[in-house]
Length: 475
View 1 (spheres, rainbow, N blue to C red):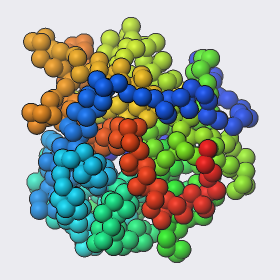
View 2 (tube, rainbow, N blue to C red):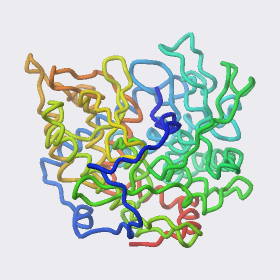
View 3 (cartoon, helix red, strand yellow):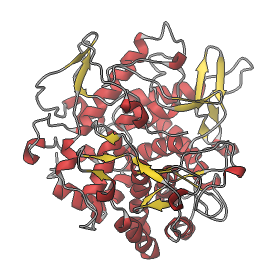
View 4 (tube, rainbow, N blue to C red):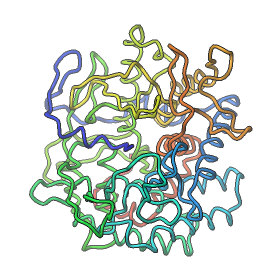
């Protein structure tokens, strides 16, 4: 089960002109008054109470759903495998848990050290310093597939490593000491140049083992690349450019070389679209990079002629457009409505559902019957606080045919806030949780309330270096 939509990107690119339109020579995408107002949104007392409960539920996932003795976050509640992407969100959850009073700082620091030692102290869980997507929860090394529900890929994944490293950086700044030293090792070892395809001009998606022997056996670099400019790409190139190891760092121009395809839906504002239009491709990097306080970037400063973009503005436009699309197809898919929106990958009835929503680069569309994960609109709260709060209240209020909560699992009773996904026709809540779904909602809500994760991440030397090298300026 893999979040990245990269495997889809090998498909041929088709451009649709109606009703989603490709925009040629689009001027810079700049922040609007509405976006600036959204960034200053004030939550009501009732809003804050609900957000407290959601954050606590998400945090409890990362505290409880772990491999032992490594304490690495599980990929999902239904299996034993651990995901380094989920670990990135887990490490970022620790400062939140401390600041919210759910754990002590000493408890958080000890958990962070245990996690990092489990990863850094081994050699079989990485290739060129880039960590495998999935690792063994008992020792942090190669998975033992005799103990897992599924047989997972063995890929040293550049995007999953990026999610891991973002969390490592956050924890390093917050805890310092041994956590920071372990973080320094993990960060410096990441050989981004080794994962870069000079001929194609893009980062590969990683190195894939051909056997369960992992790095001790044969393997090849992934044939697909990170080439379309959306949240997975930007986070990955941002970290690669900011690397403190000059032998491993990528040139800043690589960040700007990714393709920026601008489209719009009807009369709504244009924006740079992702490959398949899934909402996570507009909020993943924002969990850590504080684009809210950065203005439009300047590709021309690095020899590129593509559109200059304020990425906070871009993601707000994307979120509002997808909400409008959900409203428009609600007669066909009853789960979707004005306050039920935010289509993103999720688990549903033993399947991993990755929807395609226009406008997008691929121009494909598959709503998967409108299956909806609460974390979609929940994570978009950074850009759409009013609309996201309406959705979260709606999700909490839903009931099944027996009058029991459909999507809500009470954190005060040990629940993790929301189920991973649900449908209303017929009523069904997928009683499962995924780390890479719990994580962005937790970080997004904390960021929009206090800015904690943004502040910590942006203080790290890698983030500061990336901002400087990319010539990003304050808004």
